[in-house]
Length: 105
Image 1: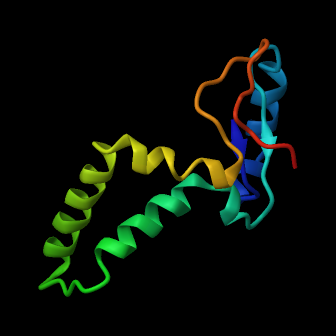
Image 2 (image 1 turned 90 degrees about the horizontal axis):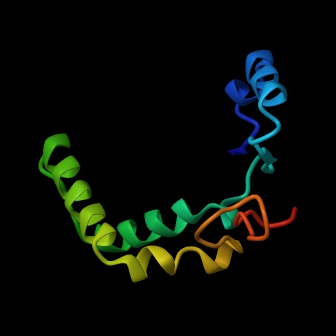
């Protein structure tokens, strides 16, 4: 599990849960602001490029276009995969012998 410093991530119940399940749960604390470690930032960058010259008629139109553009990115895995290398993350995770894809901080 990767957590930021959002207030919800710091509540006692979550800390208790993590302590109870430390045999299988591994938590990585992320810095408060680290867009370079977040592959979603790359996806948003791709999306914003597609919307550069777009003017929505209303919120429904904007929502429909964003969903369509995200679906196109979803079906082109090389685009999403291209958002991982800058973060240092990798696909796949196993606690034994394989990197979990979380960079050392």
